[in-house]
Image 1 (cartoon, rainbow, N blue to C red):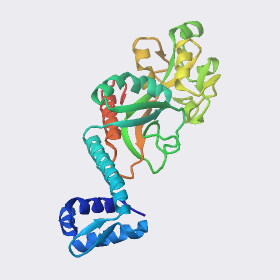
Image 2 (tube, rainbow, N blue to C red):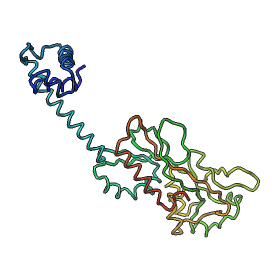
Image 3 (spheres, rainbow, N blue to C red):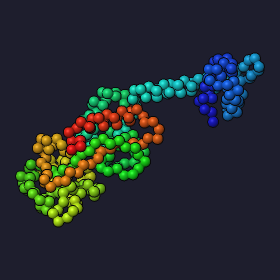
Length: 301
């Protein structure tokens, strides 16, 4: 197998005019350069140079290789220069994955600033409601909400978001505001199709120490769908602050049983593979989103 280092040595020998001069330029010994030329000829199964003690002559095959070797070496050098530039100025495609509510409410509003800061990064924003396999989905960074499972992924903590029970003013005016956890049984409850753990609400019945496991009257796979159902007056929902903070602030949604709701926060992490130094485009995005989320009013509440 011929490698680019051997080709570079071959080109250097021809350009410098001698093995000793090439050895000096490449920081090698003359014997190492000679071995490289021999190895190259053996790998290609042809004679490239007719060598005597005083001079070298390229064979026809040597001239053919030289023409192509120059192009290969130039491409390699250009690639190395590009990679060096990327390390200084992030560029290239960046594939980010998150659940659709987090993408819509916590990432999309800040993409304009990110793109102004890093105009050479090509963003690809994908959504999936459940955890994905990063390699299978060709993803550079994924945002995960909730406790992390043991994995080979690296993780950066981005913040926390509290859970609240919520309903629209219209729903509460029509069906009344529940004053106890038991009173929720008389109401329409909105919840997730999966995983079941998302339907565990941070309130407790008076006769148990366990949090309330709800059975939704209307279920959806996406938190954004549940948010829209709640805004439309279709029932009571339990959702995270990152997607409902503005709704509560503008009284589009009203907290339900706030005096009985236990403080429960969901940790938010960026996860990624790191088998080598982290690409600058990935590092920049994680740094940016961590700093941006750290000043959001819902973070850590």
